Length: 343
Image 1 (cartoon, rainbow, N blue to C red):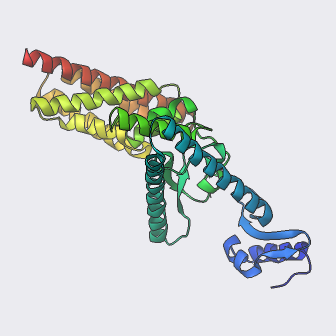
Image 2: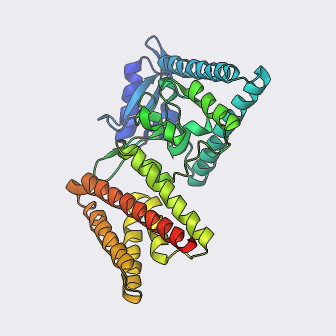
């Protein structure tokens, strides 16, 4: 369609939305406006009273070039750092290619999930440290996330990948612990991680953190060491149990699941863990079984309190700290018991 001016084009889009059309449908019907004011397209904007906003395509292209240039700068920084670390030009380029391929795998997975949902761009490969914040296209710096922002029934806006290009989502001080490059250091940090793995140990950057651990570290950035240490003790306890041949209990398996589950599933695992620990205390009365039942009871109370809106944040924090403390206690107990058994 042709329009005399941008105002007429916008009026056509507004009328279409008022008649029940979506911004995506109007983008196809109205097409891109190209006139004296510039070149514009329709973009959904849930915060706007109009439900959409005209996007200046020249500005978008400029921003896209800025992102591309920022990415190239970090790629070069990675190559330079790798070569300073002793790699040849050919070896450095091979490492960079490997990092790029890991990012493309996440992009391919996002595309496949979007196709399953039937919505183009519904799931995207988002950056932990945005490219405009000095991040890099690497699997280490990527995660699957929703593409567009959505609004929950209560009015809460859940920001999507498309609206967070300039936002640094969590503190730089915890990123290295999760193998994520810091702001402005995407290329350098990614190169240093590779050099550590080459020179020291292929798994030196793998702390065994679960998605739930990483989620907790983002939500509670003041406690990264406690979360990491608790996870290491948890892994050590599991390994000791495997080595000793002693089977892990149902209650402990549920606690591990509770620690690694997303917030909306932890309540169910917590309830099951309490039931299992109470059963163990009944069937095998001892200080340890009664202690575990007490820990699980307190954890469940804190978890249940997080369902109350005003208590959600402090209760979730209390539940997390109780879970960490309990796992540390279980790990210490298991290690002591194993040492006693071996001696």
